[in-house]
Amino acid sequence: MTKADGPVVIAAGGTGGHFFPAEALADALVARGYRVALMTDARAGRRTSGVFATADQFVLPGAGVAGRGPVRALKGGLALLRGARQARTIMAKIRPSAVVGFGGYPSVPPLLGARLLPASVRPAIVLHEGNAVLGKANAFLARFADGIGTSFATVAGLPAGARVRLTGMPVRPAIAAMAGEGYEPPGEPPDGLIRLLVWGGSLGARVFSDVVPEALSLLPLEIRERVTVTQQVRAEDLERVRTAYAAYGIASRLEPFFSDVASLMREAHLVIGRAGGSSVAELEVAGRPSVLVPLPVAASDEQTANARALEGVGAAWLMRQDTFTPDALSALLAMMLTDTGVLTAAADAAAELARPDAAERLADLVEANLPGGGLRGAASGAYSGAPSGAGNGSGTGPGEDRPATSSSSFPFIDSSTPEEARP
Image (tube, rainbow, N blue to C red):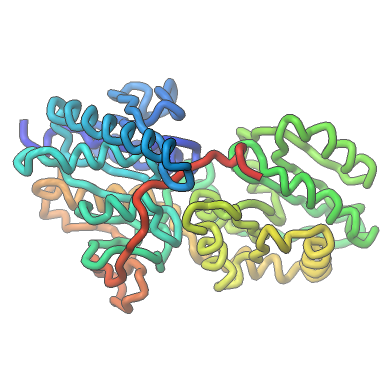
């Protein structure tokens, strides 16, 4: 077996924000004739559906380190080292051609284990960064990477000399299918409905349950009567939020989890939510205006950087959580919903940022780093079909595989606390 014959190992775990792009990349690679294998953490566990269901799967030990006390940090670090040793042993047997990491602590054991292999059998190491700030796990692993794919044109914290390529963030197929569909603003008063979609984290952020109903109650009656809300709400808050909307006479659909995200996005005139990398990418591909409230305890404040990237081109409105009050939100919504042309302009700006073929672009990056350029061979051209320039603020022109010029001094592990455990 040569290095090019082995599977591509996908290293991803935690919540959907890391798993959606990992599955999209795996689908693209399988379609090109590659075998894939999954290395993940106990929280994500074995996958029983989708592309990984029939692939080799390995659940490795590991835990976050950042933001923990010294004892828990030490235990987490030891677990990661155990996971790296286990990953190295597995990869010495399966001889992968590449290992692709999607950030967060679950990616550390597989990629570190790959790095510890002898050079003669060491696979290509590729990272994907989904945020506008390099995550702490990726900041540690980037020094070993043969290539880094980014979701944003500008990413803070890239180490000097890193080979960076702007690929975009792979999104779920149903969302990718929305690319180019366009946006229709709310209908004309007095009868045109205004459909709001409110989401946050894997089970809904409590701050939206606290703020959004009251903010909508403060809208002028002629606007409020037209509003319908679809909102992700924690199970323990459902009755409270449902009662509030009923009292204000606002039609609502409330659930802890929505499986039909694409159809909800398609119907939405405005989205209110967090600014995680996957969420932002879906807003761009769907071409939807948004109010983004970054998670205030994110390890590197990457969600604020993500939101600023959209706000900077007029695609979204950034509200920090400490200023996300009913009065402030109501004033912003009243402005948007009185002159819906601003929503259309924001939707168009979001769509301009979309990269619905991000999974293919990331697959190109992986393939270009395989021996001989992968199954399609070097003659197909490195990074064939790749997008123009990657961003690190260095000013390199479009179309290049650009080395990063900024350096990173981040500690090396993301805490990756799930949203449902946060305020």
